[in-house]
Amino acid sequence: MEQIVSAGIIDSYFKKLKESLNVDVAIVGGGPSGLVAAYYLAKMGKKVSLYERKLAPGGGMWGGAMMFNEIIVQRDAIHILDELKVEYKPYSEDFYTVDSVHATAALTYQATKAGANIFNCISVEDVVFQNNRVSGLVINWAPVHRERMHVDPLVIIAKAVIDGTGHDCEVARTLERKNNIKLFTETGSVMGERSLSVDEAERTTIENTKEIFPGLFVSGMASNGVSGSYRMGPIFGGMLLSGEKVAKLIATTLSVSVQ
Ligand code: 48F
Image (cartoon, rainbow, N blue to C red):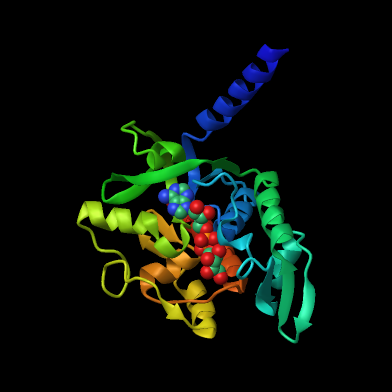
């Protein structure tokens, strides 16, 4: 009995890991934008894996605002909540409240149900850089990073990578720091996030969701961080719409590149 429990877990995990050594889309960060992107891409039949360094995917969504576990979603993004079967309540004409624990769990569930593999407790420490293109990820156990252990990583090959790391836009920063390249931003660099301005930030989150270097796309707060736009606090329509947009962009890019 003891052996079956351990062997089952090891066999099943390594099957998943091995299947994910070469994917269509590798997503860094399990925040709302990354989870929504994972859902739509998997639903379109793409092979998707998502890497989250924390134990629980969900990023900044669990905690609502100041740990009041409710979030606000605007009317424009309600079709995504409907698609992912997330419950919401009308609050005022264009705004809805959503239980943040319910929403985060639902996004995680729907992404995996659609076929995306989520790997938690894994940190992305670098990208694969070949022919002036981001072609995959360099991954390691999050505790290895936390303990600063000198342990070499494993590598995942991907046709497209999403930086969904939130405010820190870690993948874009690492790419820029190590490779003497210019990103597709106004300055050619990661411009850094500005202070809070809700309307502006919600709009630009979607505008700034794009390919910022061949093979590397940004979603969610990382989009605004890379392009020098504002933060917005606990309103989540922009994050959901950004996840939807990046999935469509990548699907289009991949379909063009296979023709
Ligand atoms: O920050 P986060 O929730 O990403 P998001 O989709 O959503 C932002 C909102 O939650 C909120 C906001 C909305 O109004 O402003 O902040 O842009 O989630 C990012 C996830 O990425 C993980 C991190 O632990 C978090 O769960 N992450 C960051 N860097 C890495 C990483 C890394 N190098 N490797 C793996 N995971």
